[in-house]
Amino acid sequence: MMNPKMTVAAQAPKKRLSWSNPEVRAIVYQVLAVALVGGIGWYMVHNTLHNLSVRNITTGFSFLTREAGFAIGESLVSYTPADTYQRAITVGVLNTLRVALLGILFATILGTIIGIARLSKNWLIRKVSSVYVEVMRNIPLLLQLFFWYAIIIETLPGPRRAYHPIPGVFVSNRGIQMPTIQGDGLSWLLWGLLLAVGLSFLLSKWARHRQEQTGKIFALWRSVLGLLLLVPALAWWVSGEPLSLNVPTLKGFNFSGGMTLSPEFAALLFGLVIYTSAFIAEVVRSGIQSVSRGQWEAAGALGIKNSLVLRLVVLPQALRVIIPPMTSQYLNITKNSSLAVAIGYPDLVSVINTTLNQTGQAIEGILMIMAAYLTVSLSISLFMNWYNKRIALVER
Image 1 (cartoon, rainbow, N blue to C red):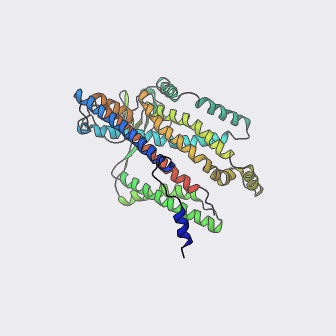
Image 2: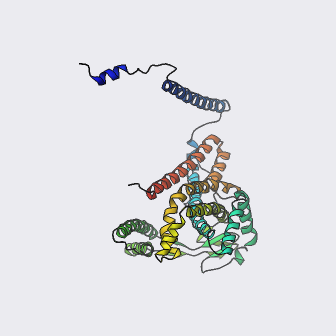
Image 3: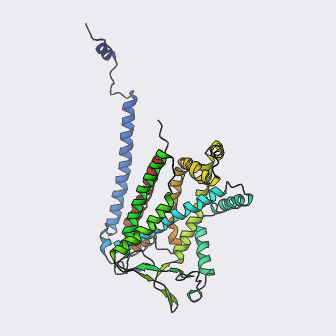
């Protein structure tokens, strides 16, 4: 007797390699699309290499090992004009990362405060924050950078009449001079700080688990602050290495010693923070308003203060709405930092512009700029996507 399953399988129509088969057509279209894109790419590369060879223009990245021969105004690592182009580009990358990361930090803090203020019951606070958002996000960032740079250069006094708000800190049109810590014990301080960050992460996981089990809230922030202060100090004390404070002093027409935040860096950071915080404020406001009013009322019925309701009840739920658009604003800060070239801050774009003007390696320079921004942007996106998944609601 024939198996019924075999009968059904035998009666099922076989898929034919026919143009009337939609799966066959889909595969053919995809192959043609890939071939078209590949052909266009090959033609562009071949045409570019041909034009370069006709004009006797060398290609490749061998120029990176040659002496740069130009100075860079500010750097997080040691650099002289005798260093290589590779070292100069590294300085540009670090300068870009410095302004981007600080911009993300301060724009998040300021934008969150303004976003909450837009929902305040106080009429004046609500209107002032609304005006701030509407004005700052509708003025082009480049104009704001020019404005803040002009304000710093024109309104602040020269070094001899510099403001002296606190001991060791001077504010003038040459920038902000402040003391720095130097000595062999500095590395021990940094290792202690990294250890404190790791211990803080473990402590936060333990505090969250303890709260889920017992319902008791652990004073996490005070403990974390104590770790960040005590562990680095203990690491330096155990090492026995010397540390000294390098305080800036006025010598001639400028300051010597300490650390300087240039007017260009200050104007760029200030402009990025002011501009982006207006967009972040709207993201935070919409995220808070996405949480139902019943959450506020339920927490208030338990006698919880409004500040605690916002921090412990509303914001954790609003984060699920806030994080995706917040990621876009972080990427905008990173990419908008390339406008630094307009006010003379030596970021990656500025350094590579000087490099390609000297070497003529325009294609390689543009490729390095694209690769650097792509790497940083993808890193930010990966981190924010990981955090978004971590706080997402898990269905039972």
